[in-house]
Amino acid sequence: MINTHKIKGFTLLELILTLALTGTVTLAIFSFFLSSYQTFSMSNDQIEVQNQAQIAISKFIEPIMWATEIADINSENSNLEFIELEKLTLKTGDEYNQFVFDKAQKKLMYAVNQNQNHLSPTVYATNIISVQYKELKDKHNNIIGLGIKVVSEVKESKVEIENEIYFRNKIK
Image 1 (cartoon, rainbow, N blue to C red):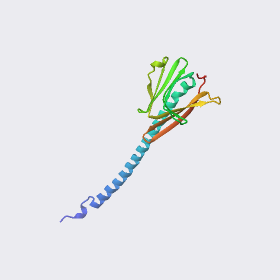
Image 2: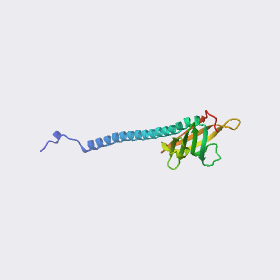
Image 3: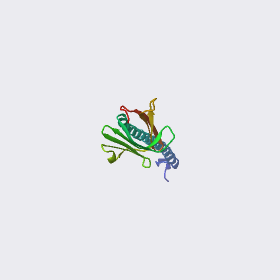
Image 4: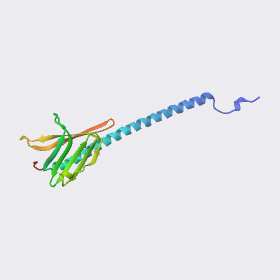
């Protein structure tokens, strides 16, 4: 007869308890990593949205400040304070600066050239869902600047940046 007290090993109950405990710990670790990844992804989207909106608004500042003439503004008609911008061409000295917003592609483009008819804009900001402007006027109803509003969006992250930029030169 074999003495069963000397056989070493794990019982079925011990193995089931070990597997259950290991599964619980693994699930807790996995949910922590999943939560961290989702937070990282949302933060990354928010950073991208803020970056693109800041790039978009920054590019407007210098050409508007130094503009001597608003050569062309094509925009959708609107009764709102801000008007959706499609194309804005400014003359600064002997150069033309053109901003073109492609709403379907969510891109803002920019070109600079000495000939207004030979401007070929290149993309400088993406994930832009809206670019709007308003004319800033003095008490005599003269245009003294432009207000620019840029809205950028990626997934659930959305940022709106607004800036008022005043002309340093008299506008024709």
